[in-house]
Image 1: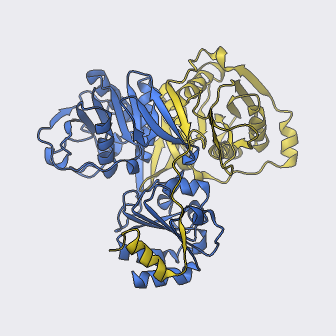
Image 2: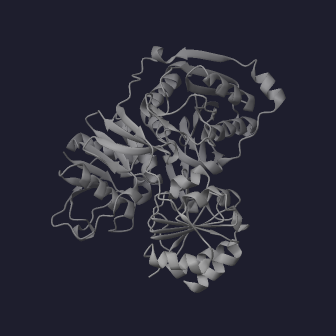
Image 3: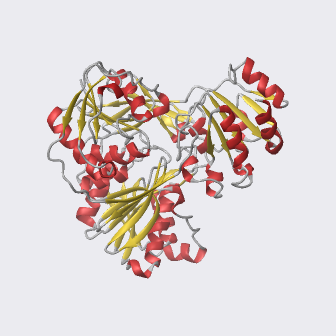
Length: 309
Length: 258
């Protein structure tokens, strides 16, 4: 058995956190070799010891990340190496490229795997995580995307021996062109991998009030998230959304502030280790899933909490 | 421009599902159009209303049991011109009919029944199976350009410019020429409600029915669902009286904030 992992685009000689989690997931499949597909060669020192090979396309990052382009690269690599498993993180990047790559290989993919039971049997959530499906892949090549929060990040402790292999004759054109990226900049930890997440909902009333949550987040070394209601109301940008259709987070501590807790939001955070809900409605669904529910006005509770922690 | 839009009938988003012996219980449960398919339908109808897009017709397609006709009527009431019902009694919520088969059904329709389709608009995922696969798989099967998670669609020469959601914000990509496949994300638009006159008008619009077995597509699930179960419940939480008690619990019980 052998695995190819489509690495999430990352900075020079870096491996993205979601790729490190996917490497851990790959180690649970079998003991065969793990290969990364990247746009550039990587130093052995930046890789976990379980990675033995890097196949790189030598293309600009933006181009490499286009689904049409990467699906062709995966096909080329697969034709040459016949991997038994092809993996990607279940991030927006992986969700864009993996099903297309699977189609090009005529494989039926299994997306958003949260548990590996064997080489061919996996668990994935359905119905916003209100049910879990145990599913067995029957095809020879297994194409899977792995939920990053369900697997520990592999240590980038340095690989003893990495072979960098250039993928030859990759088509130098895609059916789409990259135009521009609009990236929200933040000095806080990444929402998907932060150990503390403080999320605000409609109860925050406006975008300015999120500054309160930012102050608390900075004190706790955490990230700020939001419910769909807060994003839809225009309080904060879309990349802060936690939920079925936003980001899935599973921090040590999740503090839900002024969030009612629709099913769709709960599915994005209910695997958090400790959940705190601060809401002035004791009947809000979020209060039922919280480990600690504080029934109080958030505009009183948050400043007090910020001062005392 | 001819547009095909996919609409899936799913358990209504507000229903708290129950897990039975054969997967999630579907009996006597409220069903609705998948919310992301509503967004795709709205996007199609808005393109039609934009004279510059020069849309000739919008065809709604649904794969599933006979009740999908209700879902198609909703799409027609929102402004689609006609509809195709691909009939199958296989469960579409991951249990039996899976995304690769659905993508192949759409491929057949584009290649054999609705040639000259310029744009396929789909939701980014359905809220039952949560797969998010049909769009990019269909684009892969057809070798069409794809834009997933669309937050904005603009006409751009002979093609389209699409702003798409990413994990760090958004990015804009260009589709130089059609045909193409686009999947729609939450913030692309707010779907309209069908008005009563439009619901009445929709009753006269045409729905063609095709038996899924007649399309020459392998409908068997390649990924076998062995078991469906409820996630383990979280342990019961407690109500704290004030911030001081909350901090004390977080420190002493949860071992946090040290």
